[in-house]
Amino acid sequence: MHGKKERGYDYTPLFRFLLSKVGEDWNEIYREASSRLDKTEPIYWLVAMKEEDEKEYVRTGESTYFSGMYVDDNEKLRLVNPELQAKNLTPFCDCCTHTLNGKVFGAE
Ligand SMILES: [Zn+2]
Image (cartoon, rainbow, N blue to C red; front, side, top):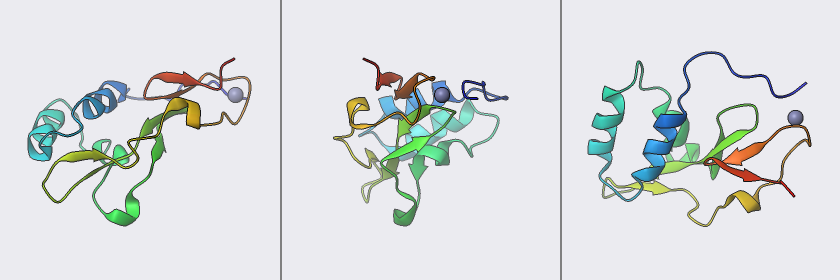
């Protein structure tokens, strides 16, 4: 059975904040983001600090995905795959609403 809500803090505002800051200075983004959080761990769910951790997209909930990010050599926040859009992804079931960065995918 899908569709159960994950318990605990909702980090969606953080993920949206990070997406809105792509291309900007990582140190400033990190300072602002961490000042709003109870812990900094969720930042690293989306932002890879090592090349081997980079992912095009990250599953943050039952059927919720966000674009993976990394910090480039100039300390700027970047998308791992800037071309990735909701329509590129395929839902794994018919009963849930799947989203990438808040955009529904797989809906007819
Ligand atoms: Zn489902």
